[in-house]
Length: 129
Image (cartoon, rainbow, N blue to C red; front, side):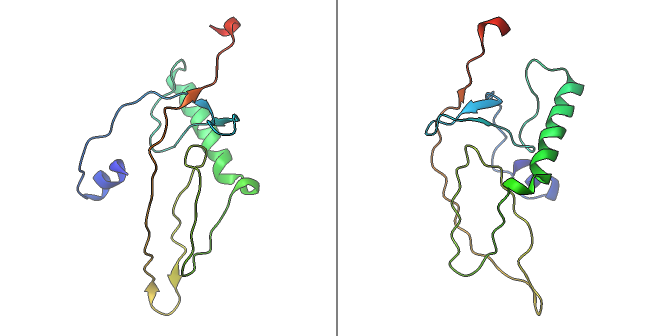
């Protein structure tokens, strides 16, 4: 969001925070492994060279974007509520809420974000350390 604000000349209230997170994390409720990535915020993968990082990120983002069997699409209507777990979900807004007669319709959105826990990394087997 900060990068988008800068590109569009919008006000930026604060600089981005540099953090290091595990690439694969354990979901704290289900115990399942899940990827912890975001194409906009992820800048590098520790332990990989730049070309390897770019290839892996491009591969994963392409898989996510083209994987229609695990995507959900919401047809917004009045009183629509969508809830998702941001710890294991990638999401994006698609401008598909245009009115045929008058142009763009307004959507009124409340975004509620709970404080998240620190990501739990997947333990690395000793033979790889």
